[in-house]
Image 1: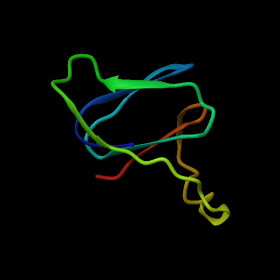
Image 2: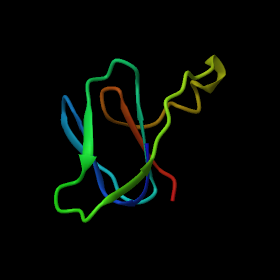
Image 3: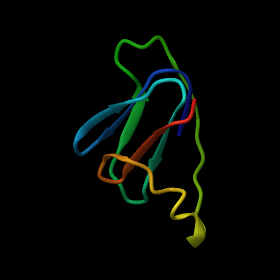
Length: 76
C-alpha cells in the first residue's frame, strides 16, 4: 500500500501502524491485518497492489518491520 495523501491505519497483532503521505507498507502473505482511515484523519488516498514476488526481489522487499509481517518505508 502506498499513501498518496491523508493518513491510514494498518492494524496488526502488535497494534496499529499509522501512515502518512509518502509511506509504503508491505504486508507478507498470511499476516493477520486490517486497515482503514486513521482516527482523526479527514481521508486516506492510497494505491495498492497484490503481487507474487520473484525470488530475486527478496532483497528489495527486506524493509524495516513495523510489526511481524508488516514492513514500512518512506518514499516521498
